[in-house]
View 1 (cartoon, protein in one colour):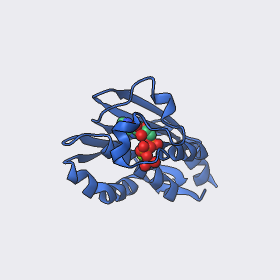
View 2 (cartoon, helix red, strand yellow):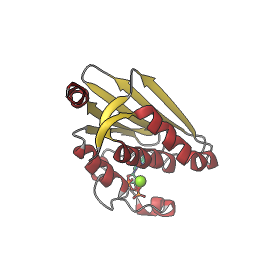
View 3 (cartoon, protein in one colour):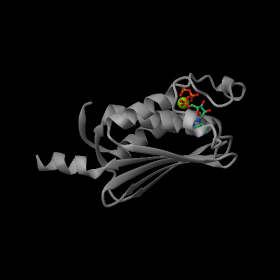
View 4 (cartoon, protein in one colour):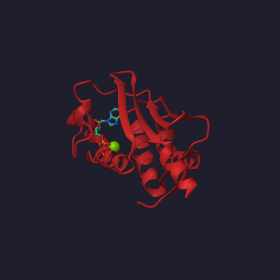
Length: 161
Ligand code: ATP
Ligand code: MG
């Protein structure tokens, strides 16, 4: 990993621009909400890959007129990044499996979206490489939130060097 100080706001804006056309085709709107400073210690290329995968999923699995909200919240010891959508959701039973390579919920339903089922396996791997933690909350028919916590300790250590 090529670790350095990374500003999440810039990365999120880049990814919104990248996926903007795809979202616009479905009339999906992007929102970005910040509480505190969104600076973390990370590999910026890899971090962008994480955001592309999560935001692309949010767009892909959200019906027309939906919303995708990316939140960054600084807390005492962590920076929390959330990607929330108003999409189809994932059942409790499926959630543990979505990070497996090539796993896709309901192949028939997702066949047309043309994915391979690798996106979240890659995200999981990259999150672990960053010593960050990821969790998922979802309700079928309502939407899904992927939440990642980054430890500020890593950034503080870097700054003290
Ligand atoms: P790709 O390799 O192109 O990303 P994919 O999107 O199918 O293909 P993953 O990103 O790994 O693969 O996601 C795995 C499965 O988890 C998806 O096929 C989908 O069923 C489910 N999923 C992922 N994100 C969401 C989401 N935001 N809302 C609903 N279901 C989701
Ligand atoms: Mg995907």
